[in-house]
Image: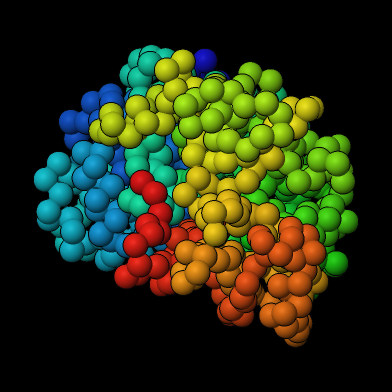
Length: 514
């Protein structure tokens, strides 16, 4: 089934069901289908053809779902920009994919406006969410002047569907290409390892729909469920929406779980409707996981994935046990996960190497980057994730860290994630990031940057001792910096690169990979 057929079928079967809810506004499936058709036709009226790229720049909005649906209906390629990025970065990405049209929320237009004249391939800017400045086109006017009849574009399995952009935590973001078939295959794989859903389900879109939060969008639309859009994540509001809107599924990052658990309303809200609290994007501290199990119950699903290969492993609720809680689960039914050495040869259970994956949600290629694309693949087509880890005898995957984040101290390989998990086990610690900092004798040595729980106290020496007892004297952290906050990406990942670059500027060791 293609996305056009999916939308047409849902509009017919669930026409009166609410498809989208956002801050009190509602859109039925019939309304979603009509407005998506109007936008697809408006783009075609402007001369866009199947396969042309359209850039979207917005935080989550009421219109986000119809925009994603419209591009699929018309066979256009969606390039979701990031609302948290600078105008320069978003202009670079718009230019990278040769986008012909930019659809932007009025609140973000000013950030990219100075760069627009230099984007040679960009032909038009559609502004929604309010009045657009001179030189732009009103989104609502464009829809009003277009036909509401569904487009007749034939989209084939091999046609491009989306170009996602990497988070840019180790350099400039890259374009990650997925065809329609790969995206559909990933949707099906994701459904294998998450609860069965139907029209009674409601998805709380707490994260950005331009990133991982989009994983639930098509499955929910396929069954006639409801998408509850949060324009921005705020823990108290998220708890309120779970209770009031009876959300059944959601997808978050671990820092969001920490924020939910720290909010005073966590003990007073009725969260019993939630059947799937899927978390992904970065490791979760064991203490956070344990507290989440106590508050939310057996609804935790941990996904290991990346934009280059979505839905690789899943740790199911019944596997959130002492034995497996440090893992990220087993390979999903149609995915293959192996650990390889630098030559690409498989390693036995228990040995750390690079994680290689073959899965239905695997990218087709990196946009306009054949060199980097070749570096990311083994000859048999498996994707090199650049993540390091190992498999146990039962096939559970354990992460060590990103390849470029390994600390080499006095000849010893030290993985920051192991130290972070140890430090975060202390009750006083809310968040932690461990990086290697320059050391005259050892080359570099682990330093922990720690955000404390409100009102909590702990000394530097206490945290050093915690790690010494856990990993030994050689690999322990050697210093601690107590900070008010840690830099994060727009999707909630702690930006290790930003933490450590201050210490490495002017030193020989690189601060990040490609």
